[in-house]
Length: 322
Image (cartoon, rainbow, N blue to C red; front, side, top):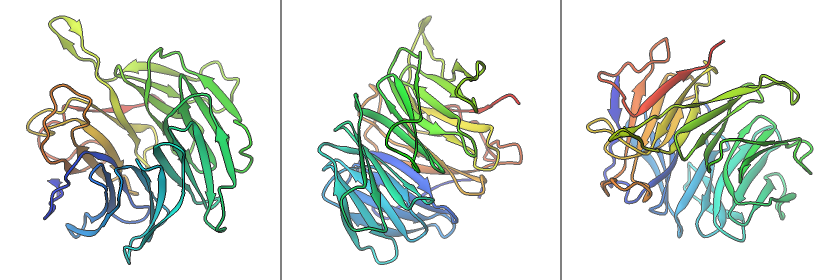
């Protein structure tokens, strides 16, 4: 399989919000605005689970190969048994729940919502969330690496250590000057990458808060129309789990015939050999078509390049200088 797309007997009926490969297999979790969570076996080319809910799903994540979570537009965080299909709610926000992560080290589900709150749910205890953080702005994006929780709110990125999460251990004001679109942790480090609505990516690669040389900003999706800059949002950033200095970004302009719509989400499998690409309308780009969303699977070569024929023009692969 050099290049393929996932086939669904019943197509995904609305925009895709997130795709994520499983921790130890090539099962792909898919959350969508059509109110369903799906689990697709990429190796077997078969849909293993479609779990309908009562709300649009804005994010999803794995706990392990058997358990997953979603964040919904009805404010609820849901837990799914991926074998039986049984689902239930573990709690809720006071406004849309937009981000969800699971910390294996602390056995906590971490969620964020438009109520300006970050909530931590200990899966070992059936009770209210153990910690609630109230921020001064709406959360735009969230990412987790081991104990380090990164949260973007307004122009800032807050870093929390989940072992002592009463207050942020580091708060960084970014000088991008525009809205943050996505935030992703750099694997095996305390660094991160931030994508903006105007096509810029900021890398923070410092290992100490006082470092003077802590990263750089570049425009990874330059667009020019009629001699003028055309701003295109960076929708997602994903780091290769094996080659941690290699990462992929995607934007809101898909190109025919490879990606018919915006590329909204990316995910590497656990070995860094497969890259899943979700192409879907987002209701944010003027030239989008309301065609059924599609998910493409690419095989990576030894240099982290696409083995599939042709050129992925709307995906920019970047490598950080050593």
